[in-house]
Length: 254
Image 1 (spheres, rainbow, N blue to C red):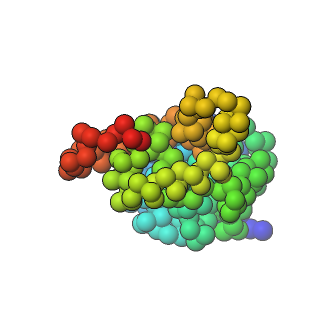
Image 2 (tube, one colour):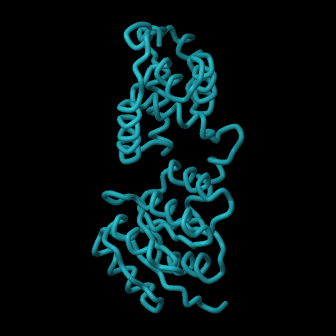
């Protein structure tokens, strides 16, 4: 295997992590950006470059940065170096890459050798690479019976943000029945078994929506960082939305 001479831009807001990357990959042609926004300004003017990026950063995060880069240059290789192995990130990268992008995902607490292997796979061999600890998460995300679809995930996020069935239907152009069908599928995949609680005579004390959100957080399908960003998108949608006649009635039915 011959090491590629491709220039690499590193987007990382933590100075200690930038120093570590310099130590481990300094034999490569590296330049550094202290934020996703700074990295994007540089990437948009660079004709041929690979990207190493953190995921959670102030302003433009690593996934959005990669999404913009792939829109500009679909063949650009990207290595995500992160301390967060949440399923929400694994599924998002699977969706955004569409099986057509070269990218790697390595956890920051991995041995240095894992970082070097990931960099070699992505930037030298043009191969995708997943941290071994995240491979079970990746498999589960693609499982037919346990993997949450994009449509189901959208409903899950809206439930976590507190939207009623009526508002979810409005936002995604669904009927209420359509929302409820997606919720039933979510409950099954997240192990929310309402019948168990009925058998134990707990009855109405059990809230399947709240339990589904708790299960999603436990599984890593949701996290506070991504939910905050989802709320920003919700507020933007609400600002654009035309009020409907049902806004002042029927909410109690959800």
